[in-house]
Image (cartoon, rainbow, N blue to C red; front, side, top):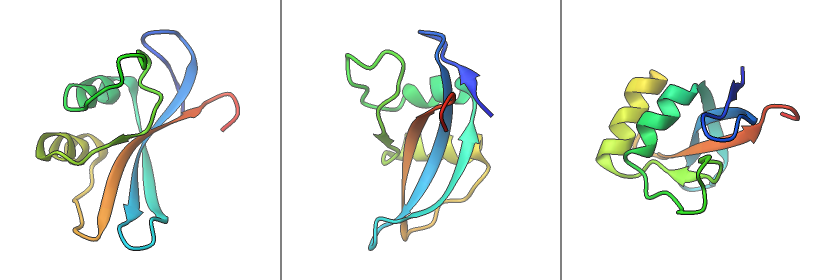
Length: 92
């Protein structure tokens, strides 16, 4: 499932990804839509040159992680770190 970026129109796949804190390996990821990305971006320290929100962003703050839980339909686990990730929908 991919959505067109609300800024540039690129075909992008957005995911909330969970990584093991010890090994840093990907444990799971879930696709989210552009509306979820817009909501999550309010809680992120976005790079000023990243208007399309394509860089990976840590979902570390209580506000960001709480919104991610609600939007992604998961419950946080203490052994995991969470990120918002973006992939090229034309190649991924």
